Image (cartoon, rainbow, N blue to C red; front, side, top):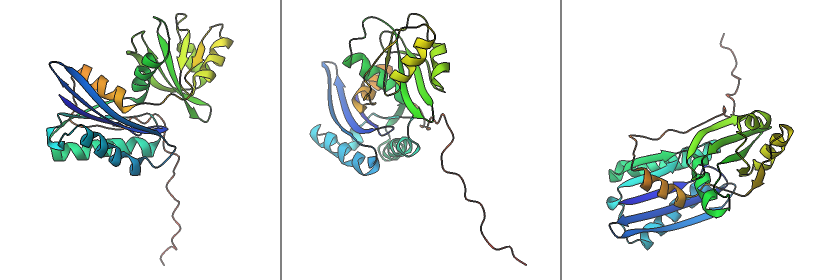
Length: 230
C-alpha cells in the first residue's frame, strides 16, 4: 500500500509518503510552519517525498488530504491537489477532518495519560473549533464551531486535558464551570504524517473529497456598482 498525504489547512504545510508491505511500513515526510504560501510550498514537498521514496505517481494506491476546518484557502489547496492527482493516477481518495489529525499528533507528542482529551483551535472572533477524543485519539464528537463557554459545556467530568491553540480558552471556560482542564501544545498543527497513518489504519476511501467549512466565508459579494441602463 502506497499512500501520499498532505495538509494545508492551518498554520503548516506538510506532505508524507507511507509505504507498507507484509514486513512493516516506512514514512517519509516534510513539514514547514507557515501562515501563507501553502500553494507554492506543497508540490515541491510532494516531489521531495516521492523522489526520496523512489516511487512513481502511477504506483500510488491512496491520496489523502485533510478536509477542514481551517482557513478557506488552505483547505481548498489540499483538496484540489488530491483530486487532481487522483484523476491522473487512478489512486483512491481518503479524507478526514483536521482536528482528528491533530489529536493523533497530540497523542504521540504529549503525555496525556490514559485519559480522553479535547482538541481546541482558536477560530477567532471568540469562537473555537472543538473535538472530543478518547484516550487513543479516536474521535467521539466534532469538529464543532462553538464559543468557549458552549464548548466547555460539552466536556464530561472525565476530561482533564485540552490541546491546541484554543486549549487555554477552553480551559478558562471549563474553570468557570468547576472543571479542571489542563491546556497544552498551543502550537499544535495537523501533520501529513499522522494523516497517512490514519488513512492506512482506516482502509477506507471516498469517491471524492469535499471541504468541511464550519463558518461562512469572510469575503462578501460586492454590491453592484454599474450605472443603470436607460
